[in-house]
Image 1 (cartoon, rainbow over the protein chains, first blue to last red):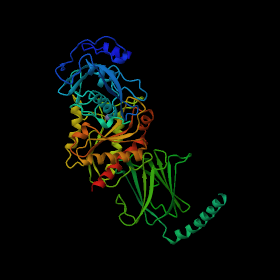
Image 2 (tube, chains in turn cyan, red; image 1 turned 90 degrees about the vertical axis):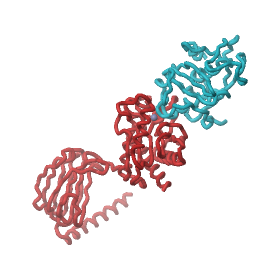
Image 3 (tube, each protein chain N blue to C red; image 1 turned 30 degrees about the horizontal axis):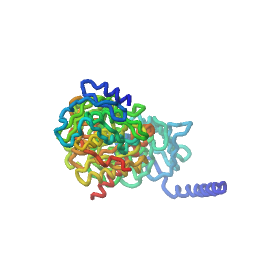
Image 4 (tube, rainbow over the protein chains, first blue to last red; image 1 turned 120 degrees about the vertical axis):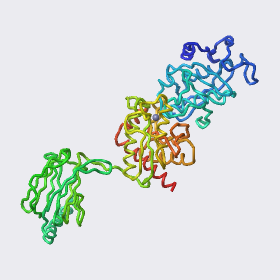
Length: 186
Length: 355
Ligand SMILES: [Zn+2]
């Protein structure tokens, strides 16, 4: 959890997400408006004080399946908080964090059902790569964000640019939908 | 066991006694001429091809190598006349053998080749061809003794059935500035994909297929290096698109994962047609059968080169370069050969099912 807080603190010029509920943080999160998000204008958007529980999808050590781990976030800033929790990795046995060390979540914006997640360049520069690695990274993100019913697809950008691929295999020019097939069935 | 050996020895001597009778019945062979030429196997491996023309087929034994004379290949022709063959002949090509010494003694003719590399299994071939026009060098003689000498042990390239006249595009993953994934000991994906693809090409070409590769050395496919990954990947697709009647596109990669535990062989495809999955499954089965690694199965994925290639296409993942054991295997020549053969056999199965 320290890593998550430090990572959040290290995000220059971006919104600081509220700490997840499990950290025992007290008080209301600051009222901030995510770009492209207008609280109160859509009926499905939770009120700022509400909390939402979704699953964060981490790959198993064999790179075969994505496994959902429940996590609760304050409604306000929930997208960025979820992606930051995902990139910080996991302590769950048998699961791993797939995002490279040092990668920062610069912003998460949602428009017309498409979430655009902007990462720092470490996403590509520091990534171990591989077809399996690339697929697991992309769909751990896509499957996590599509847990929010208002998000249907996820686009990855790096320092504001759309990469053709993350590691040289997967065509990342268009947004990714949810991949149920990769999720481990209990 | 001892009694069995004794019986075998008795049999051997009994056969030996029969040999002179056979030789006497036939006319005494005489050497009529000698020709030599550096030639190439179908896979491009060069060798020195020597022909010794004879009037009749001789009995002969071949002795080669050993501790005392590792670089000597001796052919002992029984009951054979040397004729007017030069006693010392310099040999062509320099890297195969230096000279041939011939001597007749006690009704034997001894031909001694002084080789450059030690004589061992596979470094030479001795055969007899009988009948008209058997010479490959227009040597006129009813019997030709052929001696082929390589610059080391030659292992013929494997062949597969059913790929003859097929047009195959091979794409060794990554290359040039793009190393691909890197193993814990520094093994680079781009080097393994090229090594396996070249071996695969040799098998396919020896089997009669027409093969076009996106790269044959360590380079970017986009001339001068692409500005974007998309340009580089499209350049690989374009290589296939430029080949008329290309049947399949196969991209060769090593897998990688953040955890070193991940291991095994897998194949990715994009379902443009039903044939994409069929090709992926055939290649996967071939690799697993020959490579013996864990079967991760085939997976649908939006991978650039298989999605945009206008023909059945698959991207094979040989094994995990990020796994310690598999990294060592991927660097091994024998494992690379096995995987190449497995992929070729998979192609053979795919074409057979489609016919
Ligand atoms: Zn690759």
